[in-house]
Every structure is written in C-alpha cells, then in structure tokens.
Image (cartoon, rainbow, N blue to C red; front, side, top):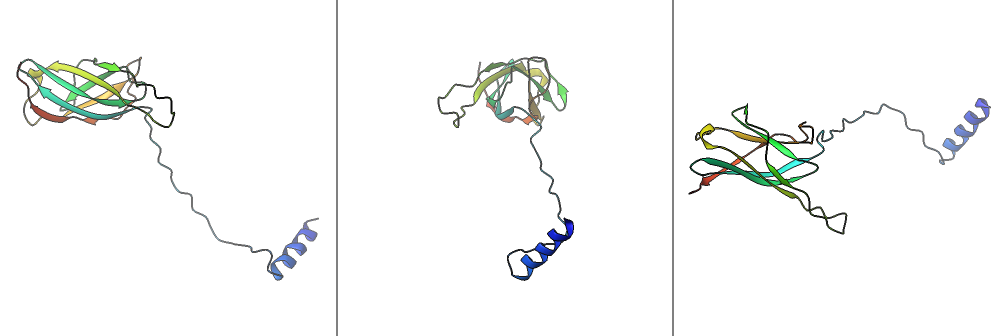
Amino acid sequence: MKKIISIIAVLLVAVGILTIHTGTAQAQEVKSDPFSAHILTASATFGSQTGNITGSYDGNVVSAVATINGVSLPIGGEFRELIYHPNPSIQIPGVFHYSFDVTKYKKGDVITITGLDKNNNPITAAKVVTIGPPLTE
C-alpha cells in the first residue's frame, strides 16, 4: 500500500498537482497574560491624614494591597463591580477606592497596587500608581 501511495505522489508531483515542501518549522513562543484581572488605571491624591488611590479595573477583584517602596500596606479597598452591558463585546470597567495613612508616604516614594481575589490571592499585576496633587481636607 505504501508503494502505491508513493507512486501516486510521484505522479502528482510530476504533473504539477502536488507540491511537497521540506524543511524545518520553528515554533513561536506564545506569551499569554498570566493574570485573570487587571488594574487599568490608578492615581493617588493626598490629604492631611489620608492618601487615596482611585482607579479602574476589570475581572473579579474584591480587594487590594498597596505597597510603598515595596513595603505592603493593609489589605483593603472598595471595589464596585463591572457594570453590565447587554452587548457582550462591550466591557465597562469597575472602579475602586483604597485609602491609606498618609504618614507612610513621602515625596519620591513609589506606590503600587495589586488586585486580590476573595482569598487574598493576587490576580492582577502590580500597577504603579500615578501621584496627583495634594488635597485639602
């Protein structure tokens, strides 16, 4: 049977119906997003006693942890779920608010925020927070 298939393949190549390509193929690495949710925007403003991080997110974020120069602050935040849109191709991000003790921050510090699931597991990448102007309280 193999001999018959080989003869047919040779004939098809000879008359130009079949083209046989030889060589090596290289697999491409597919980089996927390891996170199931995302902090889309995050900015901080400062009052005399409280720092406030506000922003938007997608996914099943229920709380967050912020860091200042890599030092974790308490888990917290208020996350309002995504708004439903009848068209499934349109996704409207949720909004969040996270407060912290302003005495933990000084000018030039780097603040990040990471979204957590209901078990306090990280489900977003750490997002660097944009620093806004001071607030008056």
